[in-house]
Image (tube, rainbow, N blue to C red; front, side, top):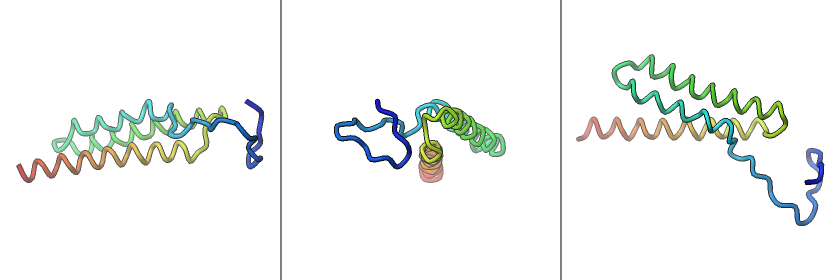
Length: 100
């Protein structure tokens, strides 16, 4: 691949990059889903687990950014998507518990 600076014109025929979503961040973001094991009994521990999983994913994404393999936005989008999925699953699970 040719070296390109940020905002350079892309040469014709160059294949698109494949770094979105951030793969390294995603490899740790699943840890946030472990929070559901402690709901509803231990909500504080569940929150700590959730935030710890998101932090782990962000840290792995940050390492990739320092290598120049990702942009900050790729990691932030990956964290946002993982967080949203966990929140939706918790909401759906709570609805099933309340309305059997």
